[in-house]
Length: 440
Image (tube, rainbow, N blue to C red):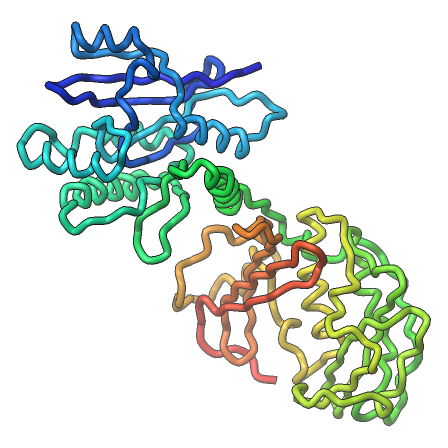
């Protein structure tokens, strides 16, 4: 077993003990596997930490060596094992930094004591800072200095700002459970022990949300199976208004290898035509029932064309789309969602049909790369379609598109799926514009 071990370096000045460095080691590698920035080291009880180090401190005022992990370290060990998994042995060091190095188990008392030492000139607030190149060695940094606040804690605010400036300069990515009303981050190890498993799960989820995103090439958004197209019936020469669609919406789902229609159900559609314009609507109905004529259905008053709905149809056709729960299945489901919501549209009915999913393919770049964007939000960190689990554990697919109808827009689509099925809440946000586009 590759059991982790903890190490620390300490100094003693007067009656106060300071832990100037600490890390948790797996195996022999010195490579960083991450780091954290917390408030201050905990208890200075060396009977628990390592009695031998106490003798060294009392004689030379310096000591370093193996230490017994404290509850915070135990929590961090569980977090690292949750992040990197237990199947493959972890190898490397996890470094623990603090806003100030004074050892004190009670955080509020520790800050008050720290403020007093700084005010008396017995502690330089920059002692905890590390060189920029050392910070840049870490793949990521967990922030967790706590959320307690007092107006009198002016030196704590100063050192926090110095650390934040250093982190910003280093460009090392960070994560942590942020307080909703401040820029502070909850400590990874709550004082109440029964709260620690919940915090642990939240931190692992936050890590995976930011760093565990699975990216897809743009071609993965296309159907990957050949489907025989067999219309249910033929177009009538003088069809106008709502009719039964001659096209089969199930062909959209059958084109994706990770999706299927739930047993006992089928997808059927109604088609609306008005000259060169068209719209459609898809319903999930029992497999043994024929879809009725539109004039036999109720009309949806909230639909701008008063679309027909059979009395036995489900409200959301995504209820009958199933998948294998892989990230790819959710990507395919997100595309099927849009394709089916725009099934049977043409000319003025088209919207999604003009979306180009990014990144651009080589044959598209000469046309779309010429746009100059006026950013409404920051540029996306990840432009490729990608998957992750949100903090609630819901599967999420995000991708970006260019649409040139009316105004050329750069858009972000976020599809948050249910934990239990493939129904989804979809949000489309325009994050940039680039002047006028096409007008149908």
